[in-house]
Length: 65
Image 1 (spheres, rainbow, N blue to C red):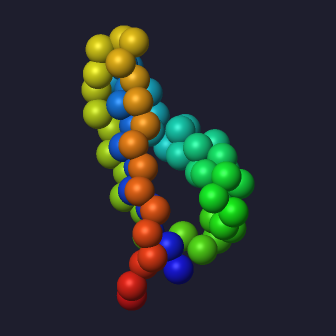
Image 2: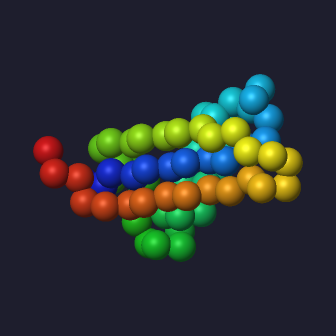
């Protein structure tokens, strides 16, 4: 089981944070060779930044029930 943390630095306050999760998660699971059905806990944050300073931070770790 895995836990993931995502922080999306977005320049639009109106951006729906959930629109960014699935695509990025699919990329991570392919790159790091895991099935995203192994994710049992997810923490997601949206940070507002100036245009041009957008970013994504993430952390993947084992989830201990």
